[in-house]
Length: 134
Image (cartoon, rainbow, N blue to C red):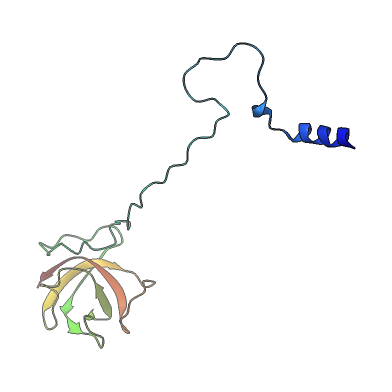
């Protein structure tokens, strides 16, 4: 019985624990069987895609909309919730708030994003890329 237990322990031993015969290797660098160390990368933060407005941007001259972009002109009105602005049936998301004020006639360039979640109860979200008074 003791002999059987010793054979079982020997079979389970890690081959890396046994001494190796012959000269030792003095090569530099990691061994091919060594696992690469796991390093954590810092979170890069939210993605900055062209369809999302830059909150620090203060408006400027109107430019033609990019691929998939739309230009809408009209008078801004306040939504039913605080800080919600509407232009026709578009809920304005982002853009220069000093230009986008209720009662102001504007030309806004951006992209509709109907699947975007907002706290406003009306309008189709429209991500503003640029805006100017008309």
